[in-house]
Length: 599
Image (cartoon, rainbow, N blue to C red; front, side, top):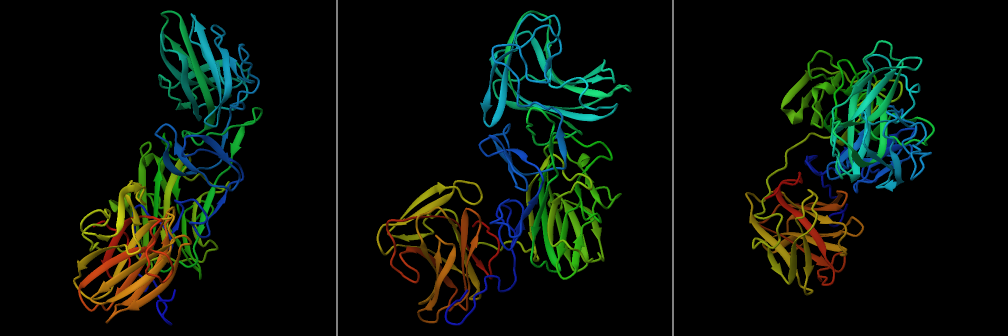
């Protein structure tokens, strides 16, 4: 980038990086955005489809080697991040209800009414929110608890002490829970015959009209058990007739104590989802750096000695690796109990707990901190740098080794290949409200809180000039005349192209132009008497926003004014009147650019 004739402008001139809790962008490598245009070198490896819920709560699938941003339909479609897990199989072959006949008691293939007392009728079959459903009605007075089986008795291999997780989405379509105590999921155990041996029931629940996920990890108990069958039980109170119509979608039974992403089969065969590996490649990792992982534990806990959440260590096929080209490879060793410097077991987390893991290194010293530094897991000195073929960050595992974070989600993985510094102070009096009197406005209309800002709040302001001489500015008194840097976030969806930004003291000013339509810098000038020297002129991509940066040094006075206007052309000073931009997060700071800090 040129800053005036023959000068190269480097926005990172002193090599000072930055950290921000809600914004991730180049030169970071991040697996939080999950889009290759935001993550240089990001690749995904998974040789099967992956089921997930999108931001609208609709269930869908993506094909092989594609990522999916998963959401929680039972919690206002909360964004969960990247689903991570090893290989898993849904042992229920027909979660698509093939073979069922509406207005009869003909259930889907492989399903069965176990009680043979109050047989349900098929009220409807269809698709809702991307999920194939069946509505079943139980109407009458039973003599025993109605039980519905989702598989045949001699199909799924199960032995004593096996843990299998049974899950299904259910809602009440019609009727109610009159004379019904509750509903439960259960595992029915059979011997080789197959003859019934035992039934292991989960905790009872009471569904309502909201379609929701219910799941239970069930442990087989009988020494003679050879097969296990997933079942659904209506726990009748024995008082009289019942009349209830339930909607079923996405029924699943999988090995292990964790419910993972739903798998929807072809109605004939068990569906297997293969393991997923995510890799972000970086060009050059220096001797100092920070890796931050923010992840959420799945519901349920691993038994002692079972699969691990994070595995980092000597096994290159199953680890998180931070590595550098030029034959330098950092491998992180860790354990919450310091008993085994390789793994963090999921038993250390409660259901749904979010954990932030920070790994930092400088030279040959490396430390690992849990929960943002509140507890040091393990401090290693004199860590050897080993040659390695991988150049990046790997999250996941392959089929040759154990499981990484099975059933959980990684919401953010940030690799910052520089030494971190905290954001410096914001010198503006007001940084997120352009209507405030601290900002002087000429011929400009400000519509406050008109768009969603980068931090997720609706606090970005709409800016539009009313004449061709509009301008907005804020003045500060600096502590010195040394370098100062101004920055602001601009939403990409505005319909205006050219933004002019300036730093002025006395009669001299440094000005930079920014093309918001194309995300590139334009002209840069230093004009007037004794103007400051431009040090930064750059535009940074933040996904939905750009951050435009203008820095200067050698000010003739400590009275510094930051100004901007929406202009009609690169290098011009005529303001546009028919177009607008959404702006948020103004910052003026001493020195070079750091992370955003509100005033």
